[in-house]
Amino acid sequence: MAVLDDLREKTMKGKRKETGPLVQQALDEGIDPQEILDAMIDAMGVIGDRFSKGECFVPEMLVAARAMSAGTDVLKPAMAAGGAEPLGHAVIGTVKGDMHDIGKNLVRMMIEGKGVEIDDLGVDVPPETFVEYIKDHPECKVVCLSALLTTTMPALEETIKAIEDAGLRDNVKIMVGGAPVTQEFADQIGADAYTPDAGAAAERIAEFYK
Image (cartoon, rainbow, N blue to C red):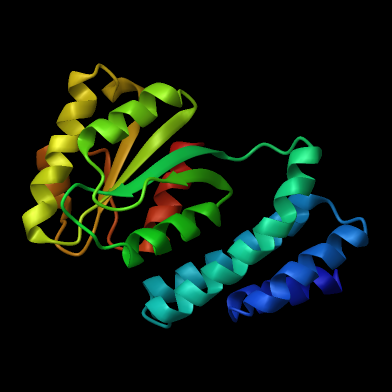
């Protein structure tokens, strides 16, 4: 369908002002909301692929993710009315003491691009906030923790320990990431997954819901 091809192209190119109207046009043409979402997810998959291969960089990913976000804003009411279910629920936040959010925001948008509903707790999030969120949202199955400073890496471990101490560790999968984080460190602190970039994070989270 021409409108969906156009939507894919505009999403990949990061044309945020055009994706919303294209989504509306597709809805007006009677196209199923899930098909419309799938078109945008396909576009983000291509961008994620290119990023992993070094063919595009963070700015291109950010503008594409924002374009998709603009499209999904228009699509959400139609999906809710149609009873379409998200792939799953997750939560993300930058750990206590760390104020960085560009990487976290990119990961969140890429995860949304996989059809996962994800709540963003923001930056400088203390362990107990994650614990309370998991208690209040039993539908949340994945917790994404971000740390961009070597000095805040211990807060990743503290957060996982707090979730364990609250008796909630078996309820969720925990993903960690950020510039100083490594697979070795993730293993050491008991995380379920580590991913080096936003595209990989989106792929990994989708696997948790299979």
